[in-house]
Length: 461
Image 1 (cartoon, rainbow, N blue to C red):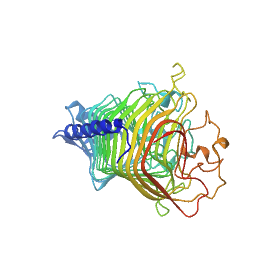
Image 2: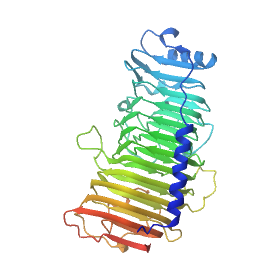
Image 3: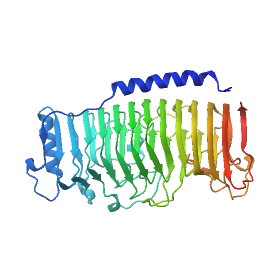
Image 4: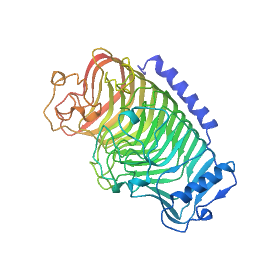
C-alpha cells in the first residue's frame, strides 16, 4: 500500500490534464505559401547576412512566409527575425555563424533582466523580440562555430560569446527537426514566450564553456518532445531571470545528457516555476566516447534550485532512466537573492509539491542525492516513489552533517560539497526538509560504501 500523501494524487490528475490540453492545442506555426531564398535577394557567395536578412524582411512585409536556405553553406552574422517568418534550413544546407565578433551587433533587450545587467548577454546569431508566429525548422544544420570565441567556465558574464538563438517576449514559437551545433555560449534562450513548441531537434553544444542546450525562462504553455541534447553545461535549463512565471510545461520522450546538470531549474530563480510534467526521458551524463570538452558524468540528473525569491512547485517527474549522474537528485533552497541592481531584496524562495516516480538507472554516483534548505526556510512536501538506482560507491572520507555548514552564498549546484566530500548518505541526505515521503526508494551501491543509506533531518514517512 502506498504511503504517498493526498497532494500527489491531485498533482498527478492536474498535470495529466494539463498535458492533454497542451498536446491538443499546441501545434506550432508552419508558415504561408510564400518562399523566398537569399539567392533571390542577390546572394552568390561570401557573407550571407544581408541577403538572408533581406529575404526575412521581404517575406515579413508581404505578410509572412518561408525563408529557405536550400543548398550549401551560408555564413552569417546576426539575423533579426520578424513575425510570420519560417526560417528553413534544408537537408543539403548549413547556416554557419560568422567567426568574427563584429558581425554580431549588440541587441539590448527591452525587458531588462539579470542577463543584461549582470551578465552582458547581448549578442546572438538569431534574435527575435516581440515576434508572433515564428519558426526555425528543416533537416539541415545551424552551426554557431563557437570554437572561434574562446571562453572560460563562469557563473558571471559572458560578453563576446554570442548565443546561437534568443527569443524574447515572443508568441507561437515553433522549433522543429533542426540540428543545432556548437554555440559560443548558450545554444537557445527563450525568455517570456507563450506557446513554445520544440520538437524533434538534435542539439550538440560541446565547443566552448557555458554551453547550455536549451534555456527556457518564464515561458507559458511549453512542449519539448522527441529531442536529443548533448551539452557541456546544462542540457535543459529552466530559469526565472525574466521575473515572470514559467508554467504549464510538458517535457517528454527526450534524451538530455550533460557534463553539468541534465534537467535544471536555476540558478536564476526570481520568477515562479510551476505545473511541470517530465515523462519518458533518459537523463544524465555524456559518455566517455561522446565528443565533449569536460568530464563525462553529469553533476546531477535533476536539479531544482530556488535561491532568488521565486516559488518552485507542482512538478511531477516519472518514467525516467538516469545514467552517469554524480547526484541523481539535488534540491536546494537558499537566500542568495540575486536581482537587478535597482530591485529590492526578494523574499525567501519556496519549494514544495515535487514528485519523482518510476525512475531507474545505473552507473550513477558516487556523490549521492541530497536536498538542503536553510534554517530560515525548509523545503516542503517532496515525494519519491518506485526509485531504483545503481550507483558507484564513494571512496572519499565519510562526512557527518556537522562537517557541512549551511553554505550561504555558495553557488547552488550539486558539486557545491565536492571540496568537502560526498554526501553523508549514499541513498539520500535531507536537511531542513518538511514532509519527505519515500515509497520503495532503493539505491544500490556498486561495491562497499561506508555511508548509511539515508540521513534525514526531517519528518520522513
